[in-house]
Amino acid sequence: MPPEPFFANIGGVHVILKEFFEQNPKAALGFSGGVDSAYLLYAAKKYGADIQPYYVKTAFQPKFEYADVMNLCDMLDIGIRTIEYDILLDSVITSNPKNRCYYCKIIMFTALKHQAQNDGYDLIIDGTNASDDLSDRPGTKAMQELSVRSPLRECGLTKDKIRELSKEAGLFTWNKPSYSCLATRIHTGQAITQNLLNRIEQSENSLMSMGFSDFRVRVNNGEARLQIKENQFELVLNNRKEILRQIKPYFKTILLDMKTR
Image 1 (cartoon, helix red, strand yellow):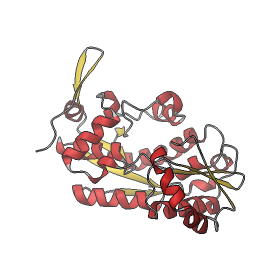
Image 2 (cartoon, helix red, strand yellow):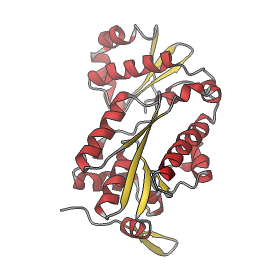
Image 3 (cartoon, helix red, strand yellow):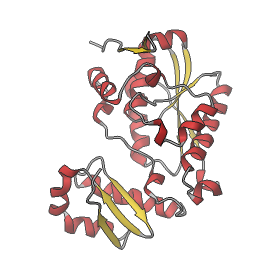
Image 4 (tube, one colour):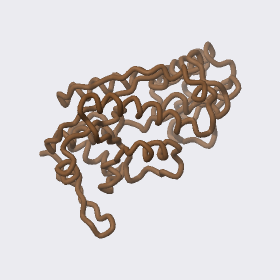
């Protein structure tokens, strides 16, 4: 049985996701392949909307994210439009300022918006949910400037509720850890290069192969700092030599963040 629509009370008005798509039956979705945008894509199709997902492919997204995007669209029998963009050509982005996410979102969603409008889609939506702390997201301003709407947030759907509904819907993304782009691993002010992004991705792939999940390899001045969940400290100890063997080729100094994620 598909999950029932989730009711939320916002300002005294009951809003459900089904009603959003009844009122907005045609939309382009900025699709990342994560928990939120995956459920939003599923719900849009379920409620009969003409939904077109777009994936903006840059050096900042790891290969496994794109694989998840393709797998989910195959599962839902929805065609995906991929927009390839060389984001490293932008000197503002590669200089990695504190508000880099703002510039990234402007670039990526402007490209998406142009393609979507050419394809006949005027409404652009994304997977921001009601749990997201917008005060800590520089990209939020960019989305507002580009008039991108967030149905999950408008309907009061939290991350936990989205995971619950995704599980009921049979989506493999229901328990997927939250994942931010590779550029977020690099300390503000340190130049972003393709070489550095590759080293970070290879290091994280190595840790995933050892059973780590929901972690980050943070980089600052050539040092790699592993930020993991508290319940995976034992995994670090058991795999210390293997971690050193696999990550040493990419970073000479490997540190463990005791604050955890």
